[in-house]
Amino acid sequence: MSKCFSKYTLWLMTDQADESCGQISPEIEKARQTLKQTGTDTD
Image 1 (cartoon, rainbow, N blue to C red):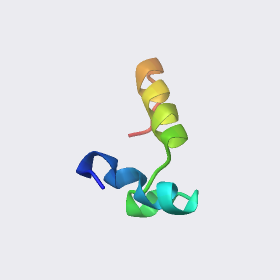
Image 2: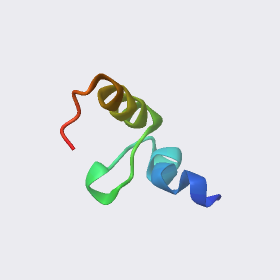
Image 3: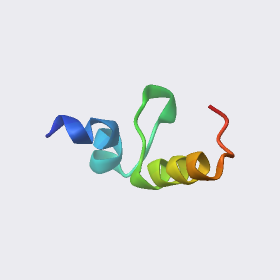
Image 4: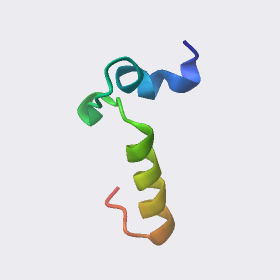
């Protein structure tokens, strides 16, 4: 699997995500990008 998909590995294999380990889903990534664009992110 390509390194560019490493953050989605768990999601691709199990349809689950564990953000605490850096494993996210495309939906989580999209939400993060939206929050950054609107200035409502908490990072």
